[in-house]
Length: 360
Image (cartoon, rainbow, N blue to C red; front, side):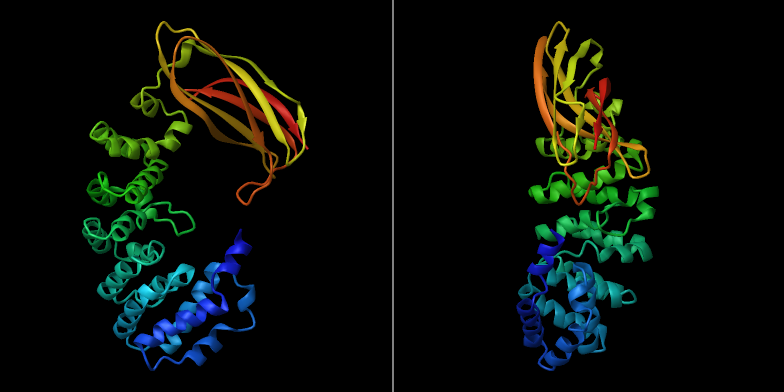
């Protein structure tokens, strides 16, 4: 996938188009010098983010020395610059705008309409937490959907592929007003960011996050969806409060019988087929969340578990057969190692039964 992205972005054509967009709004822009600065001997070996940073540093050499003037030019050009190339604009602000807070924040707000400033804003949050968060609260009321989403996404404590925000891992309270403003946003794009922000918070401050979600629950279908998505890590961890909030009760009278595997030894890349019977010995219907966990052998010889959802629904008393499969193929996010693995069936956060198998 990374190789395909490298082929799609920062091509000779897209960089020429990038140059043309800047020159359109800055006639003195030296396109030849810019291209010479970009195409050094190492260019082809650079990864996507490295190419983005390389473009940013090249821009510094050909834009006006005055930062405000450079920002004015880039804001004019921004609507015409597409794709991953556009990420070089907020990156330029991150690199050279730390001492020009008001100008930089105004530029990041503009750039996020056409690409995303969620990565570039984070060093500013770390240096000027209260000032930047006051501005992001203001952005949470912006008429532009992308700006509103940016106000939430940019301050996520654990935004993937970005620097973490330790201050919000410790105390996320500065984030809450933004999330309050966005919890009923008309855009699902924005609401999903709110849910992801809350899920990040749950990993370091589960009680604080849960208290906020509990106060929202039942207010609207939109907020209920946000809360359910936000609690996904707590639900996978079998958190009892989260289970109770969504109506998943004690599974004492719910049993898993006849867990079986199609084979006890499989090879990396193969599917493991498994089946089990769900037995419900209740007098009335019950809400059930069915999951399975695979404890994977890691390179250090220890097991590490990951939970996968099968289904969640309201069930009547009785017995139901489930057949499922899981593929043990290597991916960019997971590499498999030979050795003993364990499969566990989980009901409403409670482990019911397990069985082992060998991966080779």
